[in-house]
Picture 1 (cartoon, one colour):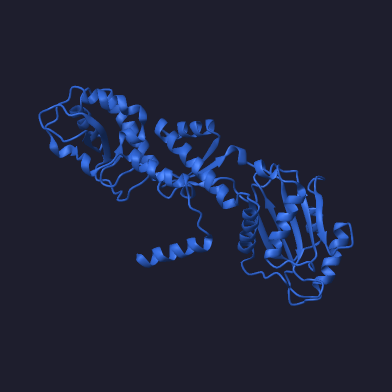
Picture 2: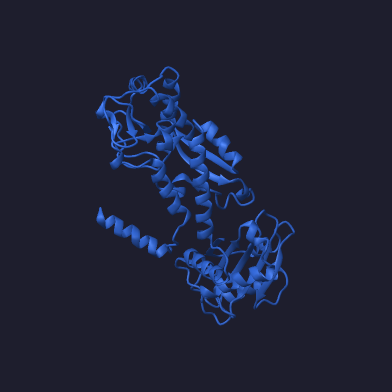
Length: 382
């Protein structure tokens, strides 16, 4: 559930906007206001705010917006109850003036509020410190009480779906253009950013159903790749596509592992073979996987697909390469033990990536305060 709250000094325009919304707004609730017009209500609020001249930003304004699949199921009265309970948790009382309006002109049904922080006795009941965070926490509390998904929980689900679809598309496609088309078929828009030095340098993933052109100036739909996964980097995807391109080029003229390895080495890649069971020189060994890495690679960390000091597993980055592995190994007898990757000390990147994705699909909710504490502890360990 998206939400926002801020303190500010307002004019009558704020209440006029809340009460209009292209003619579709509906005032669902108000408190301590006698007038029925936005202009009259503004004058009433302004008069009360002057009872506490020390508070300049006397108004609290904001909105609550549910995803369309949830928001349209909520009755207006239920939406208003969520808003009033959340406002109550941050200090709004039955002595504060406020107006709540349901807006229906945009894709996502949402509720706007204008609250006078100064109550009718002249007391400021709503503190401005961290008001956006406190209101967001309050909305989540109310949602949990009512059994509704919070914005954090909805975000976790969406990012998990994005990561699953993205990794599937990466394995099936060989370049960014085809990746964009594949993700579009899955219901996602891929937005790439670039610069002169690095070329493609960033990615944003947006669910097509979440696009809302009416509110894109307020907040961007979708998530950056770093928000979807801290394991999968844009540089890793670029390297993965480079490996795929090299493999497709050399496989045309390679009918065994020896030639395949030599051709890839000429392109700047090292090759290690992972066999099933113990390696036996001078005999046919059943190939389990082929691992390819850039020679003199500066990458030192594990990625989503990339394994430190080993590279990319062909079976992990492209399920269609299984036939290639079988055809290359069918008539190959390998005497070079130095290029053998011991099975006992290695596991497939499919298993590693699958484990990471599994953890992501079954997240444990961590509050923002707990998350900040964990970040501080990590810094202290460095």
